[in-house]
Length: 367
Image 1: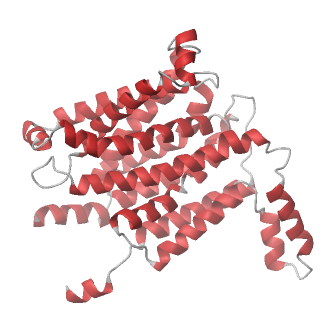
Image 2: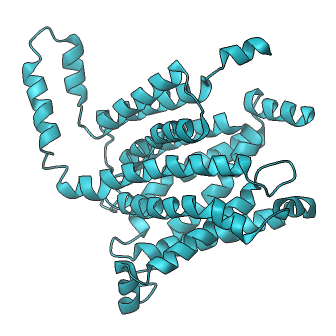
Image 3: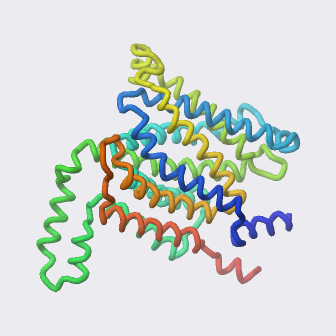
């Protein structure tokens, strides 16, 4: 036990190995490219349920392969005390939430650019912090609370709800701020022509919903992993849990097809309507990204994984400015100053949240 703790500490605070750097680079690239890959290779008219079903199936294959190739002892420990009832109790609630989240995220991918998606998607930290406190009792430090507030500010800036010109005028101008405040109120009450209603209803709102559900489902999953049986040392094997979530999600999705619009669409046009071979590119990328996350966590630690995701957000903006917009139009799309500043603020807030955890002073004194 002591040796294991020491090893984990070394992974979190020691020098990065070549393996760690390599896997962090892969995660940065995958996380940064995923929004653009989905927007470019997933047709807007495709049946979203068919995408999610194939994606969950591939994730199940990967998770199961990881489990059964991890050694017979790990497999035995993973299935110790496992029952169908425990699977239903542990997997179905988060699976239901993740199913809705995946649908919302896919819709958002197709209607907003990559940088906006990635930054708004980081608001899942807000819901995760709240849900972890409510469900597990995990508190936030003052620095973490400040980081969460900064994250909210970054979301407002990235969506140009609060413009950089307004902030600079507010900070450095000696003139009256009433005109700027009136302009801000007009912007909040009536979106600009460049950001039409669909941008909000099919882009911003779905990604914020997906982020909240991600935080809620993550908190529930964390609680289950720490308290549910299934491993001799306590808690469920993560590969087994991922496989259970996939099966539960597939079950819910297939059942939903009997009364949903997607089910009627599949019945009328077929399961792979509007699919091409290229549609598999973002699906495989998302599935492999889950594997890389595990490798980064193993070789670099969870804090360094956060840094890789931050670099992924900035990587999205860089690639977007070089290769063009998400819809495949010609020419690069310049990263706006709001996107750049918003991304940097979000990056700083994530770093603050990851490196300044809550410390129980009373418990520390006892130790």
